[in-house]
Image (tube, rainbow over all chains, first blue to last red; front, side, top):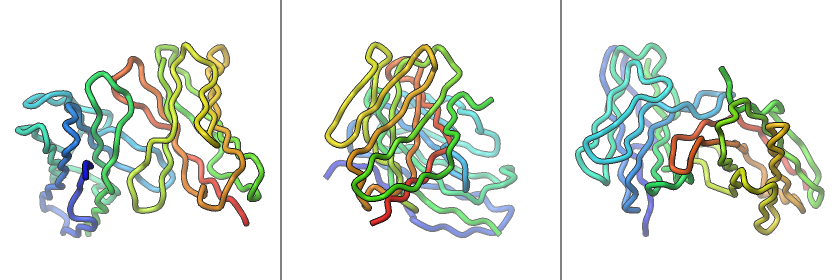
Length: 112
Length: 112
């Protein structure tokens, strides 16, 4: 079964700790994306990567970092510098040259 | 600057009737538009898309209309079913394969 997996589904952290969210895809897609969703808001782009070893900041990259060492994996680190880290985080991927993005199930991060 | 806007946070319709979800955009460089459906605590699912060279695209019960001069698109669902109850996001991209910009979403409720 091809798809995108995100783990864990729910994550709890104390304020001041860094946390890494996992995203893996076996769709052989070149591009991968990270979004966050807050209540009553749309999806806001954090970072994206169109090829391995390259990534670009999205609209709200401050306080986040990513890596793209493998085509299948695009982990997102939420650092202690992120002022409001509690949110629902979504990972997506797409084929090169295509706008349709396919999403994982999401990770709900709660920081207290 | 909200480049893609969904002005109705919610919409309620009766089962069997038509649901019409609206979306406006401001960026004239957008030339590809998509609709996604999202259930709570899940990732969005791609529904239907339309290129700016068309004004209509149909897939089963779902039809998307694009009015480029008005910078407006709409998603029609007919007949509406209770299982269609979800949040619907419209999204736009500048060129095929480029990043997506999402609207805030519209919560559709279809009453039996």
